[in-house]
Amino acid sequence: MIVIPERDIVRLVSAADCLMAVERVFASSARKMARNFPVIREAIGHADALYGFKSGFDRENLALGLKSGGYWPNNASRGLTNHQSMIFLFDADTGRCRAVVGGNLLTALRTAAASAISIKHLARIDSRVLGIVGAGHQSTFQLQAALEQRQFEKVLGWNKTPEKIGRLAKVAQERGVPFHAAGLEQLCASADVIITITSSFAPIIPAGLIRPGTHLACMGTDTKGKQEIAPEIVGAATVFTDEIEQSISIGEAQHAFTQGLLDPAQIVSIGDVINGDHPGRRSMEEITLFDGTGVGVQDLAVASAAVDLAVASGMAIEIDA
Ligand code: NAD
Image (cartoon, rainbow, N blue to C red):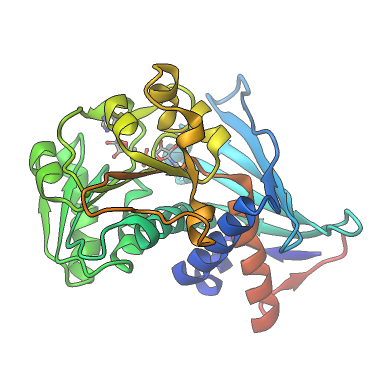
């Protein structure tokens, strides 16, 4: 069995590796070759923790397994990350445990890869202004990956508490792209691409602010009840997602769906666009929206890539299972 500790992931796996792995598994999902198993997420009644599993199987890549983990809100005071995860891969032929892979950085990278893939396939090719709503832990990963996808000339950032915005400014400046803190109205009026990555439970962007031609990547809503944008925006957009079932139950589309503003039959799997089975954006005026809910097969895809890279580079630690 191969072990890849969390500390080795940063040296082993790049954002580009993750983008490739996630794009491949989204394509596989749309071909019905990869599927997610039901998600388990439970409040354990200890340490205020939420704990659970995301699991699935990709028959094309033979990636079988689960990500175990959750949210420990008091970890920061112990010098630990609040989100904790570990990915377990199993041999699809024998069921034996093949690898145990640190999942914290990989989760951040696979989430960033998802919104970047949506920009790659759905944003207008002439997109020049990137807006980012949210400046938490995940936001800098989303920003870094997004900057690879278009020739952005400016980044506008908004956060509920403005003092956190500096981390976005730092990333943009490192990449040589001007950064400005902005109000929501200004951000929506200027941005060609908007990424939302907050843990809000009420709409931050109201109806009417989004310009025609905008691409939205809504990444923060991954639980029932969370919400980042007005359901009218979702109802008026062409909606793409990583998994339609999750999109209408735990994703940003859940609210438009329950309010009857969105027919699930109209939601497009992003993999269909990758595979060339859906044209994606149809006009320069269309508002496209990617509802990135975070799926188990995404975790397995990046963990498998990490294992392959560890074996190829001689960094894999082998132990007897
Ligand atoms: P974090 O706790 O580090 O940051 C939270 C962010 O949300 C901060 O910017 C905070 O200001 C903002 N926020 C909280 N409440 C708000 C409100 N009411 N209005 C406006 N902004 C508010 O969290 P993070 O690690 O950056 O994750 C952000 C979100 O992304 C979380 O909801 C997390 O569950 C989600 N997430 C989704 C995926 C996915 O695959 N879709 C993966 C990882 C994380």
